Amino acid sequence: MILGRVVGAIYSTINHPILDGRKLLIVDRIAPDRKPSGGYLIAIDVVDAGVGDTVLMIDEGNSARQVLDAPNAPTRSVIIGVVDAIQLESTEPRRPRANGDRKRA
Amino acid sequence: MLLGRVIGTLVPSQVCDGLAGVPMLWVQPLTKTGEPIGLPLVCADSTRMAGPGELIYYESSREAALALDPWFVPVDDAIVGIVDGVDLTPLAPEPAPAPEGKAATTGSAP
Image 1 (cartoon, rainbow over the protein chains, first blue to last red):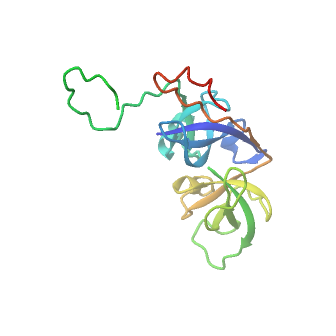
Image 2 (image 1 turned 180 degrees about the vertical axis):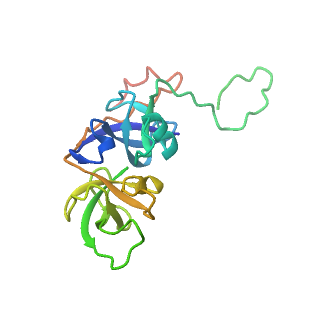
Image 3 (image 1 turned 90 degrees about the vertical axis):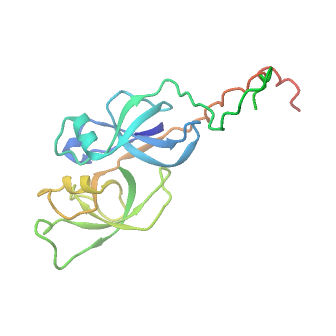
């Protein structure tokens, strides 16, 4: 699954029938610190996400077809969740705590 | 799915079974703001209505073939829709969480 941030939407009338009435959002890929990590995807929204939301999306066909309940859908990218919070532990190696040393690096 | 601009057409003389009559179009992949990125690629046009100059979105890999009928065809990329409009909202960058103990030190900025 991919972490992303919704930055816009696209509209189309001439499209594959499976996309009729679906909301298509432009989602920037982001790193866990919420900074854009390069690249974007146009994803189908099934969870009512909106512009500015941090979202969880998939970019894989089988899962997308399962979510959309459409066995022949030509789609891979689907927004499957809106993220409320991200908790990130420090990636620095944990050092042994000396006596009374409470300072954080 | 990604955005692309149709930059030309391509007419194959021999194609695999199932691909006869499917329009093949040159597509330049675009960033979300419309700048070209990467090399152009050939997309099968599942809408059969796209033409040079049009802004489209396309799907890649196995799902591209699923857009076509018959679907079990050797296709890498397929146009699945023609874009009417792109709505990009300029967003302020997400505020970084304030470092501990530094929350109230903004008064001395020049």
